[in-house]
Length: 533
Image (cartoon, helix red, strand yellow):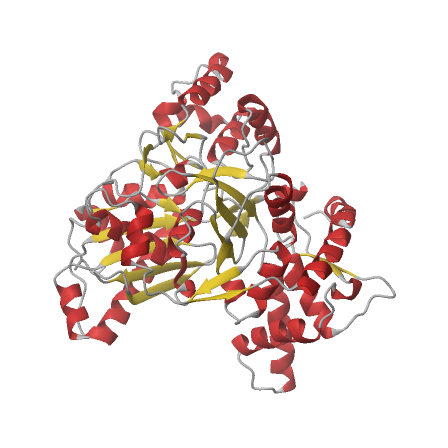
């Protein structure tokens, strides 16, 4: 404790902050890359005028509260305060749309990854570039705004993401890590920058619009892991620490998206490795040995924080509907007078599902679509539970089907990689809320994807730890030490992990469930068309 206190007092600790979908989390690490303190702030998106968003006010109030909670944790554990830091990293939910004018005013409310309102732009740009452009990418939002003749477009001076925005405010640097950048616009994997040819194609597409800007003028500068991305300014320090104690000068690594930080936090940046993050959304990242043979709307092509190509299967919906059912059961428990904690209800839910549920959920069907789902071409979401008259309607099956459907859309995308493209994958590293209850989510994930799934003892630290590690890599890497070498040698050498193999019976049952899942999508479509918001 005394040694850690000295590390903090001398300003040698590194800080990672991640803006997740439901929580802003800060992780402080020592020079050995071990988490030593944390802070958090719960928040949630708002549906305003049909758009999922977070206000800038909530961004700053949230991160300031998160940082103050970190300071409280540091004071309680070590009886010291943070005055200076060696390095800082900022991460956020990927993609989305934050356009600013020349006076640094946000032109429209932040449009998050959760919005599925850019289908026309996504399809047209995918055709133009012959490269997959998902709906949540920044360029899809920009082009959709152009197609919609939105007046703000002509005033754009800078286009960035949530992580890029916060980093900019802390450092005055308009940059993006390459993993984050790859979710804004296609990148050139060889030269580690935005694809110049595709930028020219986009500018030509807009030639008759007569905008004052060219695309390259409004995009951030692309950096890779280990690159210097600015220093914490005095203004930035005061933005982060409202007490005014934090000094300027900490080095910052490039801001990254939560997909890239998840790869770092699970040591999944080498070829043939992958990780899956399962929480509000779910996405799998697989580091590729070679490029895919075709363009798939279900699969994004992004990069590791070092710029190596990655196939990403991203689904907007994972545990939100499942969580809602758990909270409903908690309400019943409270009404009955049972003294049950919420985490215990989650454990009951998961464990009963695995222990007593049928491998195919007894013919039950559910869709967890709180928002739209691009993989299944649903522009909006309607959470549904459906059963046939002869389905085996038991509590265990009801619980199990909500675990299965959390992975349904992901399964469709991963099947393209593993069955059609024959992508080799040695194992998946799992992290996120789905894995908090031991064994259950991990076993279902392994069986559904037919791939071993490992969970590390640090899995709960998540992307905030991942971006802290990237900031540590900036200041502690040896000469010519690559990111994967740094992670292997200085972070994960003594890490313990638990690996679960696929269960053939669950795998077969999940395949039967998926047959119903695909055929039943017409029910989800009917609900969207019939039940208007």
